[in-house]
Amino acid sequence: MGLLYTKMKIFHYRDKLDSLSPDVKTITPPVQIRIKPTNICSHNCRYCAYRTENLQLGKNMDRSSHIPKAKIMELMDDVINMDVKAITFSGGGDPFCYPYLTDAVKLLAGSQVKFASLTNGSRLKGEVAEIFAHCATWLRVSMDGWDDESYSYYRGVGKGEFTAVMDNMEKFRKLGGKCYLGVVLIIDEYNSSRVFESIRKLKNIGVSNVKVSPCIVSNSGLENNNYHKPFFKGVKEQISKAVEFLGDENFEIFDAYHELDGKFDKKYTWCPYIQILPVIGADLNVYSCQDKAYNLDNGLIGSIRDRRFSEYWFSDKSRFYMINPSTACNHHCVSNQKNRMLMEYFNADKEHLDFV
Ligand code: SF4
Image 1 (cartoon, protein in one colour):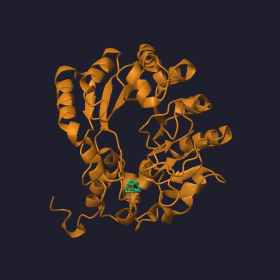
Image 2: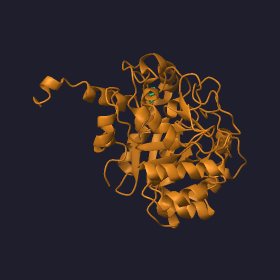
Image 3: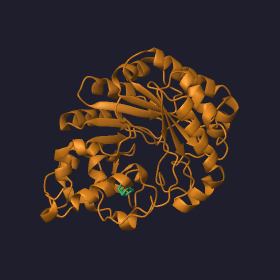
Image 4: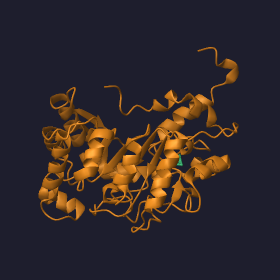
């Protein structure tokens, strides 16, 4: 298997790269769209960025919003016809709590558009699990607790839910199919000594990949680092041990447990990734990115409430430059390193390009 998390994927889309600059009139479809079909969730995670008051993510989110059935089907038609390459379903809420997810992915399964989803795993069963197992590219389940008691502490769910979700994942693997099942393990103070143990349990049920990520507790990079500092080294040691003793050709451990310094300040004045990977919310608004979803003041770039997505996307390129990251994005940004790399690519001096 090739590299799953490389930042270089966008360089495989030459037409997209050539269309990104404000100096070019052409608009090309997004490569990928993140769709938040519902804000309803069956869990209530204590650190959930959408429900935590002090994080900018989700600050204008209405917890009851969901995309109406006719609109999601129209949207699926659009992404297929626009030749969008991939759709990721994500929260707000849990996409598997969305009553029309099965209808939507049935359409995608019969098309060229690849799809994937994030989920808490509680509803990973039945027909929708079958479709994902055989037709989706990947599925990523979020985890934190390491047993029923700790899982209930994190998620405000009844005892037994951890066992049920682990069981759902194990059965999902047994459905066969091509879907790559991963877990994102969110690390905070409480589970910081359980990292190796959790990764081992996940390997034992047949998960293919575990991505270890820090719990984001603040909009400030420094505050995040200070929070993780007391247990940072211990977590890193456990990840290294897991890579050494548990990693193999069928089980990958991806270390995304990094300090966040330097990720929050940005020097560029327009964001390439808005045109590459926008977000459509359950409120039918279009947002610049995952980190600004449900931010009406500085993440909103349009709405598809009264028009089709395809009509919206191709009608006005100026909206893709209305957010200035150097002033509006001084917070966590998952695309920052990719944006910086693209800016370096665009800023190469044309007179000197040949001197490679
Ligand atoms: S720079 Fe980052 S946070 Fe700002 S709009 Fe772009 S992807 Fe979003």
